[in-house]
Length: 478
Image 1 (cartoon, one colour):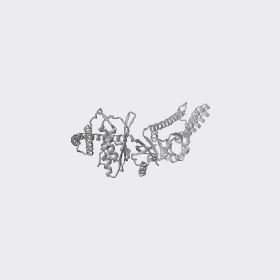
Image 2 (cartoon, rainbow, N blue to C red):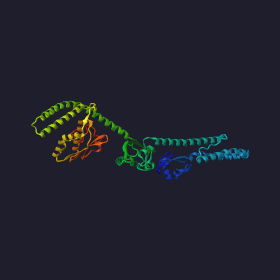
Image 3 (tube, one colour):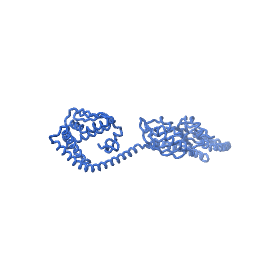
Image 4 (cartoon, rainbow, N blue to C red):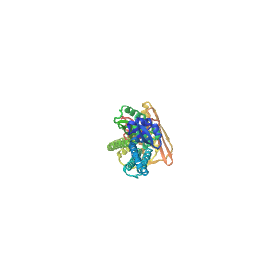
């Protein structure tokens, strides 16, 4: 039995005849389904060629061995025939006919067997040696037919197993040129069989991994154990996947003649590992937030007491009649800021607890925007000017009705957006705040001319402990 593909003999049960089989490869692969004779190492073989997807399968039976007993039989038959002729001359021509017919049937059966008619059987019409010879002939043809059927069934089962595998299964020659890829592997790679057969195995990988594996294979002696490796395979349209590949040598006569490998997709496993890692990080953050909530409640209580003192003194000072108007305006700003701080403190005290969203009041977005811009002026105007950069805030406020909401929440949102915008404009720039009515909704839009965020930052923007400002600045809670 011989297997051939891609212009080479991959395996043969007759290693000594392999070179002759490769020399005659073009001749016998061009044969059809009819049997033919082939001379190898001084012997004549009855041969049958069966093509399959990746190449050809050659079944051969030595006619010299199969017909050796027939040649001996012929000599015996010649002697028997001579004796029969003598006996026939003495007794009758009828006896000669009864003996000659089984002999002729044996000769004809041998010729039909050589032509590949394994279903031919002799009719046993006599006993003695001729009957035993006919019975042996029938037994031999039955065995040959069963061997061919078993070989065909083995080939079919191998092909079913090869194509039914869900992983990438491939074979290569010693130069790592692909000789076959299973159906699941072709679908995974998004390629046709004609595109990959005969191409280097490394062409399936992205360039960086291909170079790494190629260098490793150069240092691997033929026949040495092949290591398990992970590599990124190109799937077309710019996509790639990580596969774990287990490969081995295909041995023949104690020498490697090809390689066989199986690649398993690790993409889903890696995604699960990453999801588990993210879940653990989120769990750790949740624990931090819980501890922070407990700490914030205690700090907020003390801070609220201090705010009460600040607010009380500011309101008492504002009652004095001899104060200049500028000082009185500053005191009003202090009182307003203290009230907003008190609102924020109340929100801190409820940190980690369910928020009652039913407690709402009419909120004038225009007034909230103006007040927030006024309160944050030292941060977006005075401080940048001392650093030599100019930041402007432009208001684009269209007439909008009041909304039912919580004013302190809007002030906190706007303050954080303004502070972030200032940090994102190291050379200065413009912050635009607009309020518009869109159908039955109000839209508050804040834009800036800062550096923006890359994709990685956008994915993590809502993580409470994530910040791009470095360790020396705010931790990103805003």
